Amino acid sequence: MKTITGKTVVLTGASGGIGVFIARALAREQATVVGVSRSKESLEQICAEIEIAGGRSISVPFDISNLEELSVLVQQIHELAGPIDILINNAAIEKYRPFQNYTLKDIQSILTTNLLAPMELSRVILPSMVDRNSGHIVNIASGSGKKGAPYNSIYSASKAGMIMWTDAIRQELANTNVGVSVVCPGYTSAGMFLKFGLPAPNLARVSRPLDVAIAVIQAIKKNQGEVILDGVLTRLLFSNIQLFPNFGDAIYRWIGLTNLNRTCAENQMRDENSVQN
Ligand SMILES: NC(=O)c1ccc[n+]([C@@H]2O[C@H](COP(=O)([O-])OP(=O)(O)OC[C@H]3O[C@@H](n4cnc5c(N)ncnc54)[C@H](OP(=O)(O)O)[C@@H]3O)[C@@H](O)[C@H]2O)c1
Image (cartoon, rainbow, N blue to C red; front, side, top):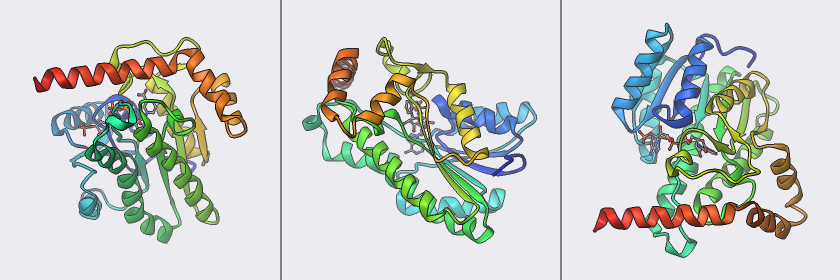
């Protein structure tokens, strides 16, 4: 899709973190941004900001983990904004734990929000894109989907699933004008990782949320299959772990990622315990 101007874009997770930067970047491209997330107030705030800056946006508060209701959400968006040209599956959640400490509910909610909801939204929206022979889906995954992130294993599995699912449907749609991209941010100075208040490992590149937003816009305009925002060393690691997975484990221990994630899990469990007591 060469231009985003005038297109209707559904963006999940528009209310916080990286989503806000993607929403602003889309508005600068003169797209109509349909923001979806649970918190009505934060959504309305970003939509108001876009309108004040001269852009077009619509807020649709919705919990995407209600899978059975997603077709109703899409119908509602059609009525408010017309056909959907671009879908950006950005909303996600994560929870750090040693794997055996997750509850079944944790596993279900992370996989539902991060993987099943993007799949179901795409399944419902795609037929109209294929019929019109025009459209683009961008899935926001993560470097954690390229190499397992210890103590964040369910999130990692959801993002790995997203990367492979994107790879498969991109091939199915190759002879159409419907593009599919997966964008994999690494550490980013906004959003979920920032909430821990801990520094990223020394050798890891930290992207700005604006870099992720620019990557999303470029992925659509250039119809890029996969975009990885990590630095060269991490990309080299990702490319080599297919052959040498244990080498990747050693690198993660060496740069301090394994310890960092264990600390995130300990802090999260401590904070949750103190809220419960
Ligand atoms: N930040 C990073 O370092 C980083 C690194 C790699 C990849 N990523 C990926 O980048 C994307 C954005 O992450 P972020 O860091 O911006 O996360 P974030 O700050 O935690 O924001 C997540 C967004 O998703 C929405 N959301 C969560 N659950 C939802 C649900 N059930 N229904 C509807 N909306 C929901 C949230 O809004 P409500 O709470 O109002 O629903 C919020 O707008 C994610 O896919 C994440 O995996 C982030």
